Length: 157
Image (tube, rainbow, N blue to C red; front, side, top):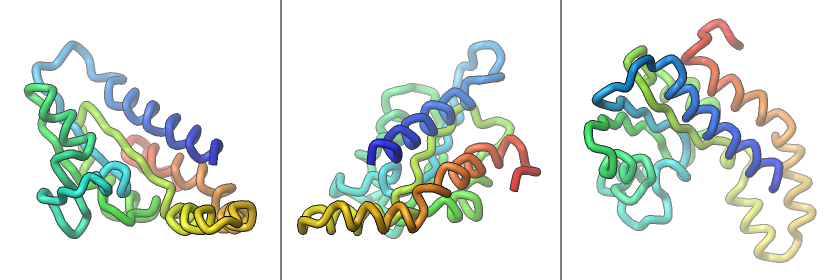
């Protein structure tokens, strides 16, 4: 769990830095793209008024950021249930040359995080964690790296 949290934190920080790197002089507006899964979309907030299918809501952090930072335009493509392959296939295209800020949370669905939490609640967390490791924690960093780099380096596979 700690490895996944560290990887996710590092990814979000690097995505934010990508958003600021090379942006030149201070801009009067921010073009923000929010990529990812349920963590980004706002699952758990209880309000999915922006998109009920993807469970995007006004209490999700991308929307709250936009509300607190005047001049920010938001392209909100994060979707509950998304995997790294979904980010690469359907979400990353939202990042354009005019994008100045990108955030991405991804990986929980790739490793079966919901089932892991469920199994840990029932009591056998070690077995559930072992299955999650087998199902993808080891390859997750590579998939996340591809997702983070693709808009900036289209040749990465």
